[in-house]
Amino acid sequence: MDTQQYFSKTYQESRERFRGLLPQVKELWPDAALHTESIGNEEDLTIDFIYADARVSNDQVMFMTTGEHGIEGYAGAAVVQMFIENHSHAVDADYTGLCLVHSINPWGMKHFRRVTGNNVDLNRNYIYKTEHVPEDLNTNYRDASRLFQPNGSLKEIPREKTVLYEYLTKGMAEQGYKAVKTAKGMGQYEFEKGVYYGGKEEERSASIMKSWQRKMLRNYSRVIHMDWHTALGPTNEVTMVISDHEERDVDTLRNDYHMENVEKFSPSKVKGDSTNHFYELQQHEFPDRRLLSALFEFGTFGTDREAELREFTTIILENELYWEGAEREEDRRWILQELRNMFYPVEQEWREAVLTEAEKVIVSVMKHENMMKDASAVSSIRKA
Ligand SMILES: [Zn+2]
Image (cartoon, rainbow, N blue to C red):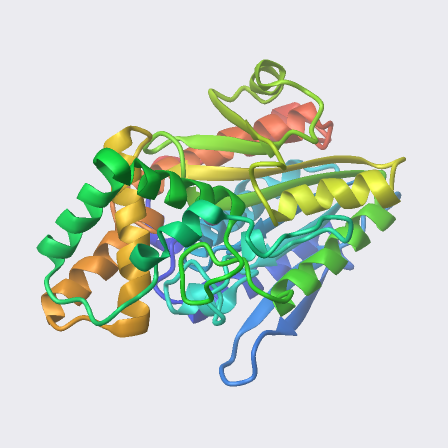
């Protein structure tokens, strides 16, 4: 399989490819159009939407979003392209609308970071109006803030790594491990240069996406939302991560979508998640609509304890590098490479797995949600 035609090297290349999908989309949805929203004012950064109403009646919509976590958007964009090229012709366009989103966090994608230009983890920034976020949400994080806050340039990675590993794994330091783990889920809203920062204000990207969530619920009886991410879950496999707001249990979801890996999360353990916001919005303001909104993650490091430590170390060191720099060039390169390994690996095996795993789950979702005009019309990716 030639994965190069799907996985781009730069944000600009990825965006050009995405915009280039419009003619193919118009063959099926003649009224489809490209919408762009500028993010920030210094660079040419946009969130791009390809949107089309259903041709006859807006019964349902396939809503795909990518790049909430910047660097993770490269895999998401590859999946969207694969979906349009290989499977859009199977969608019943008479009754199914389409909304494809290229890179919710274009700054992060361009600069190969997870966060926005304001150091915000966007997926901790979608707060529904009834949700209250106390300042001291994450006490553990504050206690351990000395470790998660950048303090001086990185001197020698092997040593920094050892210190971090020890802190995260030994004795009293279990506290440090818990702190990062909680911060990962709940975000933290106090330290603007720290990791998993949820932001003091709503990011422009979040405001824009909230209005598109509203638009989807207003326009369609059923909204099927697939939000593409990377890193979590078993290596080279896809994992569905879905809010407790979804009524079906894990086994039913596994069965319905033919998926091995399904994880549910409680809104009380995860703050500011965009899919959670989507469900809150639906329940409070559009109770007659049906919503499926889930994250789909392509695993990289794996799921064991060692992988988790590697993940935390990578995220903490990359954050320190961004703010304070490194004294040695080799250390700088090593950290950036680890971040790539975690969120956008170069391995052919991983990239092929992204496309084949995505294909399986997209077809399962299309079937289960009755989006296809003819089940036999579905082809699979031809192996090169
Ligand atoms: Zn993500």
